Length: 323
Image (cartoon, rainbow, N blue to C red; front, side):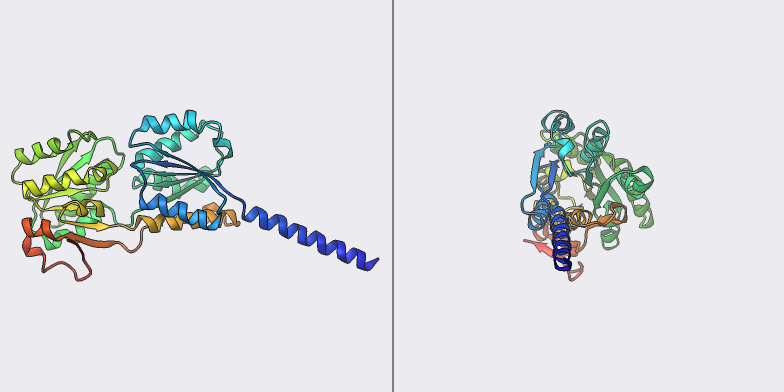
């Protein structure tokens, strides 16, 4: 009798363990809302989830920097699937804020995983336990004002032109922060308001440069639209023969003189690991904001030779040159 009871107990424990193991390794259902096409951020996120949960399902849509496409996806394409989705991954401040707003009126009960610079998302993350909001957040560790602070001491720039996208939420935060840094070095910031129109972006910025020939530095911020136009902007700055800085590696790869390369893949991978932490029992509210690591100073050698050759020998030793 004792043997029968012992055997039954062992089988029961093994059964519980099997159910627990299955629950802890269940495939996930994840919506992925791209903003400007695939990036190292979402690629690394998906790769890590596939590594940890191979049978997970991904619903990927590219909004192509159009909020109406984001809204249409949530209200029609994904509508029937939202209640079964465990997570939604999104990229870009405008995109994520719109998704966060729209999800309040849907059957989605999962976790929103956002990548964006705006302080609205940061505040939401910091207050998510109070507001009972299921949110994970990734953002660059070095923002535009910090990039300016890195490079300004080695430059003699006094009049800095900064194109900014009127439709991006963080644009209202970028300019005041940069003005504060510029004042410390006796420089001034001159905002150039731009409309996110690919067909006119070169003319918009080019016209501003022609009107104000006293600008001695052009700074391109972390802005999805501007980054997507990096090739045009690189040609524009070299044609205008003006020293330029960009807050993202794609700018420098296309001819901007100096920049910083934030490690977006690192953010995506670590957010995926936070998802696995949640799935294995870690309370969401204990998981911190994920900031980029291993940021790299980069320079376009040919562009600097044309606009500021004196800088080539004064850049930090760890600077990576784009030839």
